[in-house]
Amino acid sequence: MSNRKNQGTAPAIGDRLYRQREAVGMKVTELADLLGVSRNTITNYESGKTEPGASELMKIARSLGCSLMDLLPGEQELPATKFAFRAHQELRGNSRILASAQKFLRAYADIEAITGTRLLPRLREFPINPEQEDGEEEIERAAAYTRDKCSTTDWAPERIAQVLESLGIRCLFFDWEGAGLDALSVVQGEMKLVMLHRRKSAVERTIMSAAHELGHLVLHPELFTSRPDGRPDGREYEKQANFFAGCFLVPTKDLEEIWRSERLDRLPLERALLLLKEVFRVSFWALYQRVLQTGLAEMEYRQMVQRVKRMLGVTGRAKMEELEPNPLPEEALHLTTRFQRLICSAFLQGEIGVAKVAEMLQMTVEEAKELTAGWVTVESQLVA
Amino acid sequence: MKVNWWHSALYDTCSLITLDKILLDHPEAKAHFGCVRAIEESFTADQLRRETADRLRAEVEWVELPGTRELGRILSSGTLSRALADVDRLVFATAVYHRLAVVTGDKQLARALHLAHLTVGNCALVLKELVTQERITVAKCETILECLAKRKEFILPGNLPQNWDTLRKYRFP
Image 1 (tube, rainbow over the protein chains, first blue to last red):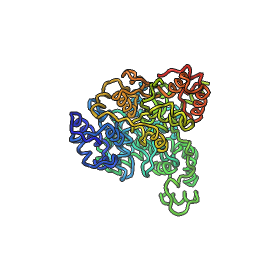
Image 2: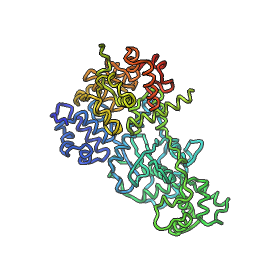
Image 3: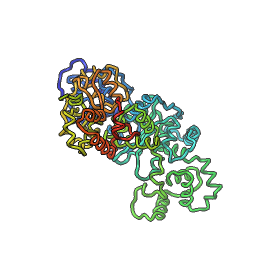
Image 4: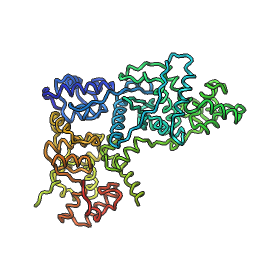
């Protein structure tokens, strides 16, 4: 550990370190724990009393999700990242996730700069007051407008990443071992990024989460504050984003038309919902909510849970994701994203190397070597 | 005996992985690589798997990173591409600071090192020179390339046959 006195660069490094740590809402003690140093060591770095060595700087950059260059003086700093995410209370302000999101944002900006591509912002915001009582019509209009603006030729919920990309929102899938985090949306300047948890099951939940995050981006731009713990804690925001997601994935007009033209009212509701799932390819429970919201049918939630349990042969307590009738297969969800395609393309053109692929995709260099070997092999097959 | 350029060279992470794969199948080849230098940052958990790092630790000699001020000065010299990973920036700064030759397959890093007037090559070039200097036979070289390809380690452009004929004509960067 370097413990040299300030030699001119320390104050600038200290300031940068402080700003980067604040941007991801990481406490001094958390950073100290990650680095295996004392709290005082970090405060001394930040005050310029001592200077981290190059090796410590690299560890700090890795822990804060920033680049080494962000910590070195003389380099241009990017604006602080603004975060908002859909998660349980205990995950709010989780600096490890925020650092990962920060890394992905940087990687996305890097790959766009390297490949000379830019996803143009196309999303129109419809800010809405969470206290507004008659807001549903406005939300429905916002969802319809947003859906109309999607330019994918084959709009499908399974292609939700491409749907978001067609709206100028960057999208990627990430691995997360903890519970409760389905998606995260991040804003930095004009860049909007939605990160979706790569789930092994219940991909309907991923689709819904993506549309929910879209709802926050459209309806609640004020949620994206630079203070991760400064976000208003309102269930209304969540309800509005959920309503938006439902309207976006299952437009009222389409739902009503199918319901009436196919006389679905003649069927038990759970059977009608299963048929609707064949059309809309979203969660059974999202369809249940939509049918209730549009007044097409009525049934108490507990009664519906009982019916679904009976239908699936489930007894006793069950998680909601276990109560998804006719679940979409895991492979139904299209996991390829523009982010991955740009990285693959840049690698095949020799614009980036394996270490950069690893850094951008947040995997080890060894894993990136194996991944890129697959790209090269595919290319050689195409050439042959 | 002639001292080859790679005999005290600094290896980047990718080249360390290639070296590890060569040595897994051909441990006797170690003698041809001389002193393999590396920075500790190539051995962190986000770079190498633990078992690979453990194997390679026995093969390398550590090189210290420059101090923070030197690092800042070298990295802000303006020749580095945004396409370089942070770990490669450290390899670059360390090589410049200690004036070391570098073994890397990364074209961006190789270009930056060339501009800094440092010798640079990759594992394929090392192998090629071992054959041309008659330290290993063409047959041995073919075997090494074949074993590497089986391990999905393509040290020659992946769309070309991984054999001596390709290596003979190969140039880097």
